[in-house]
Length: 254
Ligand code: C5P
Image (cartoon, rainbow, N blue to C red; front, side, top):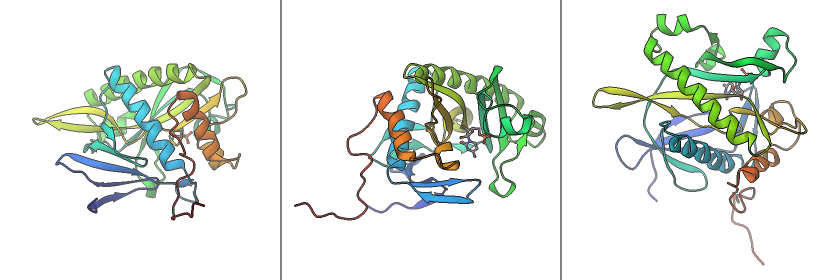
């Protein structure tokens, strides 16, 4: 296949020019980072698992009428997506206290919240993605008031879908992050779910045991990350064969 031009290099994914105008190829790497890149490793199989899992969740969202950037999965590591204008916000939905919220408020991780809470961080690695109030978003023009209202309602619908889907396979959705993009159609921007939805961007706990099945396994050195993601994929029935063994070099077969 012809080499494609790389147009963006991220921590866990790269973006390449797509085959047609308005499309991109999203490539899922095995690289894992935490603490804004302070902790780094390569976890064999992670990229392929996230590609599959993100495909599964994005397809599910589209089936219930929530537009996303996803077009189709191309292979083990790549998916074809629509090119969108990313709104520079991390949209975080929390059902249970964990992570930065638990720390900030001195709450025990796993404490049920009175209702799902949507919060926003401004996407800027050099500032460590600071939490921002809605007023900043409007005042600095990152999104308009109507867009912000729409983003919140999409985020809550995504939360209902993900919570229900994961509950069905014995997993509690603690929190997650999505990104939203503007898809321009005839000078009219439509909001779509972009980036990825995977155990890299969600907190997922086993309902029975509380075992962590997400990136906290890497962030907190709790065990084997690929095993945790494989378990999520297995339960959701999206596990491709030999996903954990992506040969990086030719191997001799006897
Ligand atoms: O770290 P914090 O508790 O704020 O994260 C909330 C949720 O957002 C977690 O599921 C985490 O995986 C996700 N997140 C993310 N990318 C970031 C920050 C948070 O996917 N840069």
